[in-house]
Image (cartoon, rainbow, N blue to C red; front, side):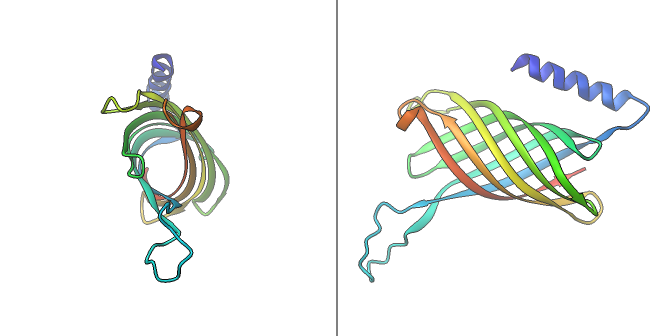
Length: 177
């Protein structure tokens, strides 16, 4: 992980100091939520329980560099809370994003993430973090853009089924170039 951070920092300094600008730096933030099946749901019509309920929220911020409006590398940190399992986590990870298509500064992208997940309590040990997602970046006024996304997250946690906690989340966020 340290080597990857060193290469990222070296590449960023090299690109910023070069005379020909091949890309641009950016800042991003997202809010994601996960839905789950309600374990208290019954088929009786007046029990007041919904079948699908919110299960987790994720807050993420990151900085990165986009190369020729096609490829981007970024570093992220965040906070995840799964209230069904009382799991708090602080993922730190790198992301590689590829813009599949672009039309008038709106893009459709896919991305993959890998990093470390830190746990503030001893209920579960620290673990690895993996992610894969897709989404759209909608151009806004000036340098602000809106991001809508769908992500798959895998958190390596000993004590869960197969020692991992998997989730699919829907998110909305922003990017600032």
